Length: 158
Image (tube, rainbow, N blue to C red; front, side, top):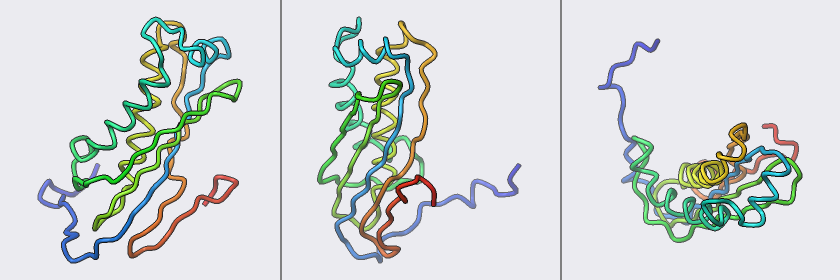
């Protein structure tokens, strides 16, 4: 249990930071049975095309990140792209890339976008495969800001 009080929690003041172009790419995986993945790929789920719905959900979620993560600044996003790869036999790979010209980074927006997209696919396929699993939600890379760029090493470690 933490000794901090609600008074210790605050949004960071970014008013003195320079406005610059910030980008972030995050990924998530949805593990599922091969038969489930085939139905997801084909768009034959009872609820419709899960991949199109997931891309839209990811974009919408990125735009609303500050409403979901309490200390996240609302940002005017320049672009959000959600790409989904269904070629692996046992999982779906979701990648969300976010760009903004702002005083703070867009890592949270990319992470929320990837997660919301994965959850949307889960929601649309849960009736045929409730054992699906979300895994590996992580920041892959970021650019811009005072701390500089970050690139996850190819082996996935730090």
